[in-house]
Image (cartoon, rainbow, N blue to C red; front, side, top):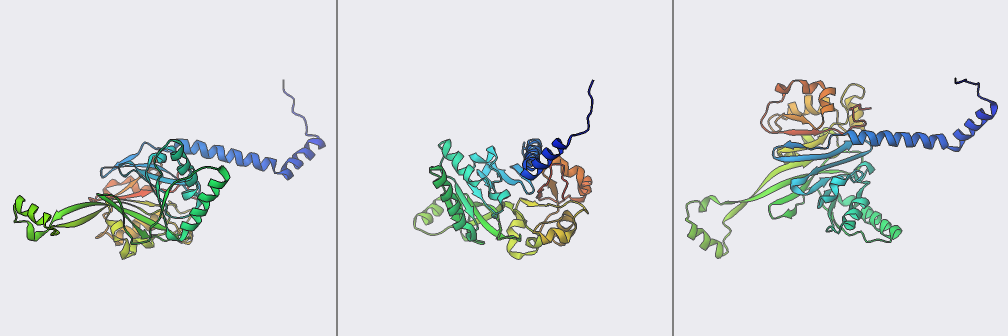
Length: 329
C-alpha cells in the first residue's frame, strides 16, 4: 500500500533551492540530450542510391549536418563527426555554425588515432584563420598533433581532388558567410579537327606536344548547406542546378513557419523551393525530387504524387530537421 503525503515545507524549500542552484536545469538539459541521442539513432543512415551515388549521413536542424558521398571519399559539413565520416579523405565546410563544423577537431583527431592520412579540409576563405586558431587551440589544450591540409577555396576557384575529379564552390545565402560545392567529373575528348585521324597519327601529334583533346567537366554532385532560395536564381549557380544530384536543405515544411520566416533566417521553405523556384526554372532544373527520409514523405503532401515530378534528372532535397519526425519549428 502506498500513501501519498502532502509535501512538507522542508521539501518545498529543498525544491526551490534545487531550482535556484540550476540542478534541475542541468537535469532538463541531460534529458533533452538523451532525447536527441535517441532521435539520432533512429535516423535512417543506410544511404540512398541516386544517379549511381550513395548518399549517406544525418541532418538534424540545430544539432548536426553531415552528408557523405563514399564514391568520392568526401563529406559535406561534419556535424558532430559521425563515425562514418572519419573514413572520408575530403571535407567541405559550407559555413561556421556549430551544427555544421563543430565536429571538425574530433574528425581530425580520430583520423590521427587510427593512423589515417591527414584529411584535406575546404573552408570559405573568410573563416580560414579562425579555423586555424581553433585547431591550434585544441593542439595546445590536448598536447596533440592535429594534422590536416586546410584549403581556403573561394567561390569560382577550382581544386583538383584527383585526376578525374575537381571541386568548385558556388555562392549561397545564409545569415553568415557561406558557400556550396559542386564536384565535377573530368574527362578528355578528342578535338573535332582530329577526329578523322588514325591512331598512329594522333599519337604522333600527342608526342609532338600538340594539345589534341578538350577537357570536359560534368557536374556530378552539388551540396548547398544552409541557404535561402536566392542561389536558385543566380546564374553563377548554374552548374549546381545542372548536377546529377543536388543536395539542398528544406528546413521548413508546413504552414507553422512561412516563407518569409525561412528567408529571414537564411533557410528555405518547401513551398518556395519546389512550388515556386523549381517551377520558374524548369528549363534549367528538372523537377524530380527525392526526399532523403521516409518521414518527409509522410509529412509533406508534395511527395504523395510521384507523377508531379517525372523529369529525367534529379534534384535531391536534404531535409534539415529539428526533429526526426520532421516537425519544422
